[in-house]
Amino acid sequence: MNNRTTRALRRSGALCAGLAALAACGAGGGSVSSTGRGPITYVAGADNTGTVQAILDRWNKLHPKERVTFVQLPTDADAQRQQMIQNAAIRSDAFTVLSLDVVWTSEFAAHRWVDRLPEDRFPLDEMLTPIVATGMYRGGLYSVPASSDGGMLYYRTDLLEQAGIDRPPVTWAELKADCAKVRKLPAAKGVSCYAGQFQKYEGLTVNFAEAVNSAGGVVTDAEGRPHLDTPQARKGLDFLVRSFKDGTIPKEAATYQEEDARRAFQSGKLVFERQWPYMYPLVNKKDGASRVAGKFAVAPLPGLSGPGASSLGGHNLALSASARNKATALDFIRFFTSQDTQRFSLAYAPAAPTYKALYADPRLVKKYPYLPVLKQSILHAVPRPRVFGYGDVTAAVQREAFAALTGAESSASALRNLQRDLQELAAGK
Image (tube, rainbow, N blue to C red):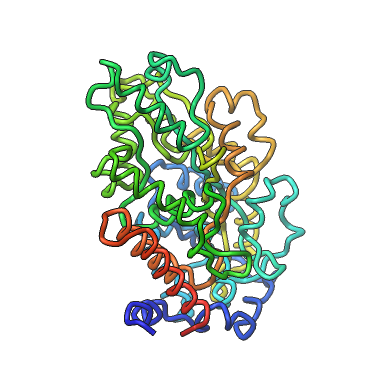
């Protein structure tokens, strides 16, 4: 076993190391007790929109003896996960309801850090099917979808029209051809073609997985086995690597997280950008902060030979196995994940609802024109690796993908290394 894998496993502190030990880990925590009422906490990343507190205020007004306190964790997803794991490791009751990234469900359930939830208490049949699947582990429900997310292609309608292009690109080849036409325009002087999120963090795992999936490959299969040393994975990573080399993607995009990419598009520096729906109203503000307000639209992500596949994002609510007042917590999860609450939260900030009906609401579509495209993105999205050692897997993906994008390794070498590392993690070596 190489040193990198050894260090990764030590960092994880997993109770069961690797996918081979899933059976030994069991099926997660027990079902929720119907007893125990009183104050609880809601634990999530910092909320910059005020939406979460507004929802908690509604609950607290209705339940003054069962108030919910918002425990805000860092905005960085890795830091959130680590603090939740530390709380679970010491069996603290400080955290009650956890807001989990959708890819954490398997890990938290397998380690018995969260309780199994009663499916009949939630209207799961009213939600989009791929979203519901993110809360399931070994046939049981361990987290309830509160929000989803899907990547979309933002594009400059004004520049495409000036270049005589009447629709957004469907393939990577079309994207590059469209860019070549647009960049000949005087209005496009100094404008780069395309960017996503390519800094070495979770966003790189998302963008890498989308490239592999959009070329017909997979990072891991349904059983968590890696499939990276393949022609499809190579074509996906090669698209990104060659795009950095030929200038389709500007070199500075290797430092981009979501907000960096948003600012680049908003200031008129990009023709195309891969981004989440939260960006739409920010870029469309008419207060002078955006140079492209009213001059852009969204489309599905392009792929190798047709429309691509987004990574499936979002957050689900789970119940800490070591929490108190679980009856209150269960009621709160139902409240927070309800269609009424999601409709309420859309008044505060853009989001990706989990309920089918909200995507068809004419008033919401008028306010958030991205909703029809987002729905298709979610329905065709591919989950990131659903493994309980996700922290180690994403760290390996980030390391090898970044090495390829920056020229430290070839695509072939990076994928071989990644295949080996993920196989060792799956085997618990």
